[in-house]
Length: 313
Image 1 (cartoon, rainbow, N blue to C red):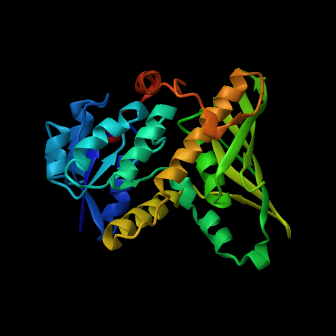
Image 2 (image 1 turned 180 degrees about the vertical axis):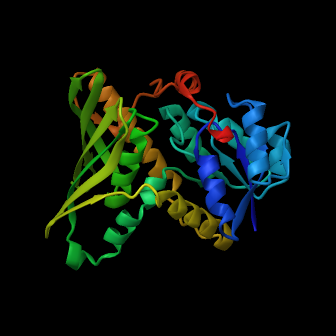
């Protein structure tokens, strides 16, 4: 049984993941360290509901008593610092989406990977059944991917990363450049469109939506036809957890490599820069070293202010 230690229960994922794991015999949340915005009442409720062994006073204490760390705070700017306690003990981490939010942290993540640390993550939608089934078809049947259109919604980065990781998972190539196309605004909500080009010539268009939840919808145009599907959000968490457990049990990676996860972040950073530059294309390999990226502290503040006590429900 894989012993999971979770750092912060800011988002709904620990609650959903723990419930799914309880139905099987592969892994369990056994300990928690929390210095996020959730109060002791919610942490205690999480511990009681899912039969955790302990609440830890430090990340180091947590890392000592588990097999793997799950970093699930909503502030992506803190993710790699939390992960350090596990790495120093030679233990792997799963880092929830968005895995990081700046060019500097992208570099840090790749350096950690080169040093031999095991980093698993990040968006569950990359492993959606609909994507896996499409990719399992022979190329002779489905054709070679020419263009992907994808859309999802809640916010630009925290949720928008889902659709970018989905597209990257489908295409499987390295990104080249991103160009902001346009924005539509109605009734205080807005939708933005970005055009993405991969190094092999494959293209994609992704939309982010702010103000309303939108499903993850993908249209894949290939050399032989057009395929359309909407991701069943009720099944993506199990698909992700299965891959994490497979990776930990076998020692063979079943999740995206860190360079693939970083590529998705750089796509979103390049899209934001293109928007700031009036729609000029931005190469994902040329994001300035001093680019501030997306502000995790600011997002955490807004997320906490709007959060309900979901662990007491």
